[in-house]
Image (tube, rainbow, N blue to C red; front, top):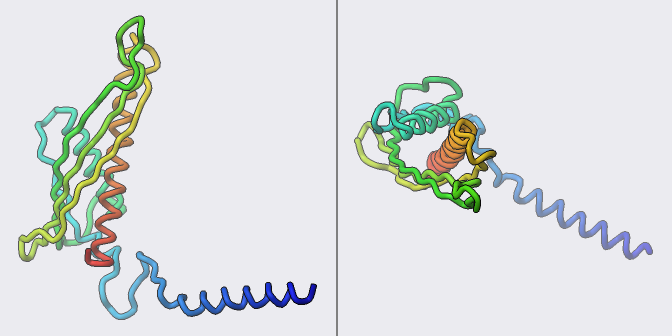
Length: 183
């Protein structure tokens, strides 16, 4: 009985010793630096996100605005950042595919919507690309009635918005990783 307690105590002591040795290795991504170097928040504030080049009034133009607005909110927290040090150029295409078809009407009852994005981070001072990447999002949506056109249109728009938010999350995470680790 007392031998089991000693083993448990030794195991807990070993875990505490390992935790103490690795405690100095952890650094939060958004921590403020005391040595005067800019922290991640300041670096993200310096990323300019120009409007996406899509034809005005098109469905893709609305999605481009949605992605840009989501990125601006994630990077800056408001409408503008600091004077830009980097420019993030986005290029994307979209796809839609039917998953399930109603046998009686031949109309889809469930569809997939996808966005594929290529992004390029350019250093404004040297006008050189410092990072490129690709990301994507696939979301599905149901059409609640085969003859309900408004419901179908609204479901598609909600899917577009969800996909744009997911793409913006992916890009923001990749940018944060670049500015912290440099890769």
